[in-house]
Image (cartoon, rainbow, N blue to C red):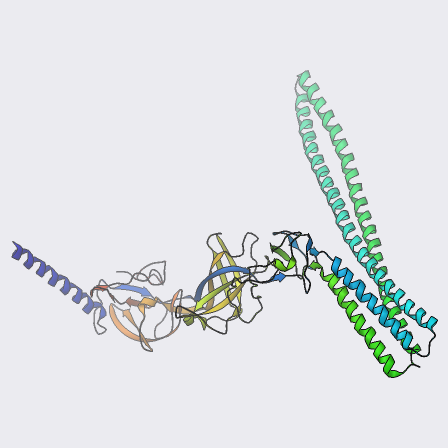
Length: 541
């Protein structure tokens, strides 16, 4: 029984081998005069071929800033923002206790006054009274400069406050006017409906219905009259609010301009007085005067530095953006605040790299959530295909978003991970939706090349060995191997530049399976028909 089974199995195996061999001889032999009936075919068509490069990455801001108190440290007295707040450039972020800085400024000013006094004493051509008067005038004029600066700051703050308040009043008046218009429209519609009901009642004989309908019409007419009055009042109120805002902001703007002029005049006067004092000191010995002047210059530098230190206790936003982190609390030390978020490269950089987490001294992190980009790594073989300004699409699967973009940066140096060479690229998103979040994973598809209206064939119908490519063309039931020149290979198939014509039928060769048998490749260019149907699934029996 076992021997009989073995014999049967051997016969079946020989039959299968014979069938496979016969199929290969009929399909794969280029000199066969007659095509095999079970070969699969595809057509040469005219169409588009697109070559793409794919990579994965994450959404990131094109600009992130770590903002810290510049050159000063101390106790945080106020924090004006919190994570998630949107700020504009120049907005106040936080303030340090400036008690020590103010004391240092007062000391520097005293040193300046002493240096000025020494210059007056060293000046031979002036009496002590004249020297004192000159020094007092200079000191007084510096006070005038400081006062003018403070008044200019106050005028600017007043303008900003009035603008916010007046904008709010105009906004409220606008809303009231819109509500009045809506109410009038609604009551007008009700009046029209009531009038139609009255007309129907008048056509009938029901006196009660007529009386009720008339009462409704009268009621809605009264309400419409009230609505029209309310609309008139709301219109007048909005006009008044707009006039008030205009006059108030004009007044504030004029005040800012005036204070700016006064500050400029005060500074010019201070410069003039210093020049006059230098002229008056000419009779003194040049070396003595030069030394005293140098002391004044040094003291003035100390005053300027101390003034800068006072101003540095107020932290201002260097850019418009969203507050990502606030690394500190009121009452804490500004020097103890650190951030763990590294700054990402800008979209205009010549190369990009993944933003790595690193310790930094940023007190507040600002990020631009509207200007987003995707940084990704592309394979070494694909890197040569990527060029600046190429169109790209970032697909955020988790968010269900497809966002267009362009390649704006390419690394000039490779990144090696586990002996695999890749190159970093940056795709700047053209119009990222507001729902997109920083850090979301994206699959990036870059259009490396595209050709339209070219002859194309299913890629599995083209056989390439070395630099030579051939196809098997079926004409009049006979198969013939033809040499062809190929071009772009990508989605849509393989471009054929010579050797075949549009509409030619190509035989798709069988491929060798893993077990040593023969299998037919499934599909050519996707979609469509079989033999005679263009670049469809490409293969048919």
